[in-house]
Amino acid sequence: MVEALSVKRNATVGVFVGLAVATLAYVVRVFELLGPVADGRSYPVFGPELWFILLAFVFAAATALGVTLLLTAFNAYTLTKQVSAEDVE
Image (cartoon, rainbow, N blue to C red):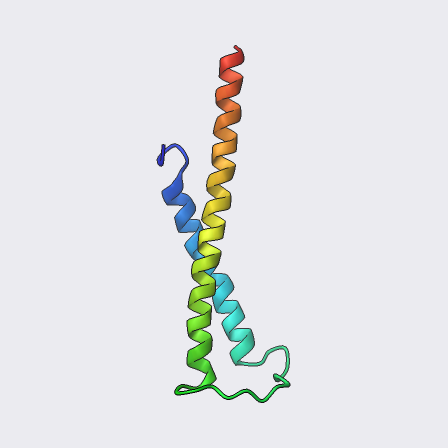
């Protein structure tokens, strides 16, 4: 079933999309591409760059999981439609 749903391919696509989105968000935030941040927060122990890289990692993992889930659900729906069409014949 895992092979029929292409879970491995979907996970690979999810990881690449997650890394791309998280990298883009990290670069925009750390290099202030949309302008400086207005608030004056303090970041304990480490600077903001490390905190944002950790946040980017969590964001990448969540995005990868979401993309994998959506692609696998779409594949399951497609396979269900194919099986239903074969049962009608």
